[in-house]
Image (cartoon, rainbow, N blue to C red; front, side, top):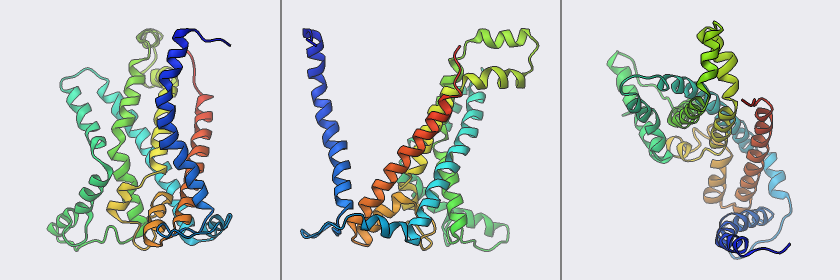
Length: 291
């Protein structure tokens, strides 16, 4: 097919984007797959190909099983909390009252803080010796609690902190969805005698499915690949209790000098996110309605 001058110019303008995308995405991805098939330690010039040995040894390790479990806990737990709170906040700030823009800003503000900074801030709250939370406990006559010393509690803290930090993102998506719903439909429901709950259940919620899809996928991917908050708050501890797949990439490469294993973990994480997000997108797309 022959291109006209305008079409040719458009394709030429895409060349820099293709080059950047190839250099920053495609090449690192395929290089990571290649490294995952080696026993490279990350520093030496010498290495050999070991096939799928890194993958088989990883699937048999307790560290990987704990990491996979926590990856799903962080991904699903954070997403559920963010969707419920995000929708609630969106319904609240969508009302007309004074200072609603200030309320939106306050809710969204934590999302503007880097995860590593948020982790260190939260560490100052949950620290055993000088943590703010333990200072409050002692103020009421209690003794210090090792909040991050129990793996289950530490995982729960990470889920709550990450969910609350990024709930503003879900709020903005739902707010955009609410403002995109034709007001005539809501008014028609009022004329028919619908209560607030009936109007929300049968009109608002079905029309919010596209927003739910977008918010769920964005927050799910963020939770599955969570790294900086965990690294700052617990570094995967106590022991290996709070590790997820993203943190064991760092652990294997820099602490175990196992770049091949780290690359294999990265490839597995990519595949996991790709499959889970694809399934969720397909399921939620089926629920969308047109108006």
